[in-house]
Image (cartoon, rainbow, N blue to C red; front, side):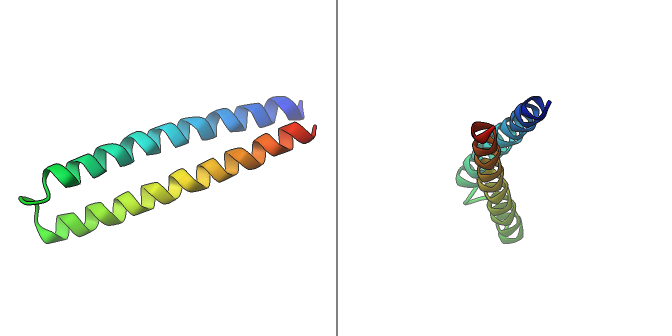
Length: 74
């Protein structure tokens, strides 16, 4: 039972990781393509959001690795 729960949690973390990664890549590409034409406020907000999404990527990766280590120990 515990193994199935850990596998399901890892699966959800993979989804979170993939969505955050795709969103972050798209946002960074948008920033580079519109760097000259976008207002300073939009640029700062975009960079802040990109930083926040990157943080989510790292945290979900760390949490997934912890879950995989727990699964290994069972």
